[in-house]
Length: 108
Image (cartoon, rainbow, N blue to C red; front, side, top):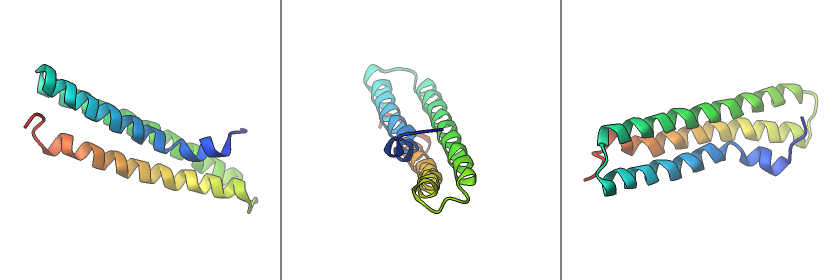
């Protein structure tokens, strides 16, 4: 599978970035428009699960690429290893982005 190296390496951070924007946009809308806060929290948690799923999928693709490049000591193996590590970093970043939604009152 041929990919742009930069796009392939940057891909694991995309779910985190989209999650960050979506969570805080939804949080602002729930508070500003007076929407149901429980529904907002459920929506934000659903977005979190979706972002984790996307990150896990990208991490699995990275692991598969890493296994396929086992004999290649060059840039392909490095890029695959970087994708796996960035997927883990993205999963942690998604967790830390979602923590305020779970731990703090939404509109105070």
